[in-house]
Length: 275
Image (cartoon, one colour):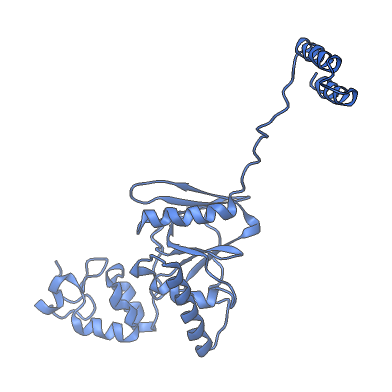
C-alpha cells in the first residue's frame, strides 16, 4: 500500500489511512489535508471518493472541474444524450420545482438507492413544469458503469445518469416512438428493454430487482398493446350432410306447428349460411 499522499507526496498518517476512506480508484491515497482541499472545491467528492483517480483530483484542483474517462464500451444501441439543461430556471423556481418532484416521489413511494441523489437534483431541468412522474426505478444502461434512474411520464420514458463533476446524461424515448417494452428476469440484475422502430435500449437494475419488475409491469400496461383476441364464438362450418339433417328437423318442427313460416325461413337461412 502507498504510504505517501498521491497529491502532495507527504507521508501518510494513521488518520489518513483509517478504514481506507481516502483511497482512490487507482490505489493512490490522499492525506486528510489534500482531501479537505479537494472537497472544499466540490463537497460531493466526499460521497464517492473511491471512483476517482489521482488525475481526476489533480484536474479538479487545477481547473475546478474534472472529466472522467469513459470506462465502458461503445454500444450502437445507446441513443444520443440530450441536453439535461432543457429548462433554464431561476434559483427560486428550481427549488420550488425540486420540492414538487420530491413530493411526487414520496407519493409514489419511490424505492431509490442513495446514489440517485444527483439524478433527482437534475430533474427540474429535464421535466416540463407540468410534467409528472408516473413511475421510477434505479436503472443503468447495460455494458456501462453509469448508475442512474429510469422514469416514465405521460409523454415519454427518460433515462438520467450523472457521474460526479460531470454533466447529466439524459436519454428520452417519446411515446410515439416506443413500439413495446420487455423484461428479462435475472436473480442479480433484471433487464428492462425499450423497443423503438430502429433499436432496443437495455437497462439493468442492480438495486432492487422486485421494484424494477414492478416498474416494468406499470409501463407494460402503457406501451404493450394487447393483441386482438379471436372471437370465442367462431362461426362453425358444417358439412352439407349436417345442414340437410338440420333442415329436415326444421321442416318437421314447422309441420308440427312449433315453428311458424317466418321462424322456419329465418333458421333455414342461418343453416345455409354455414355451408
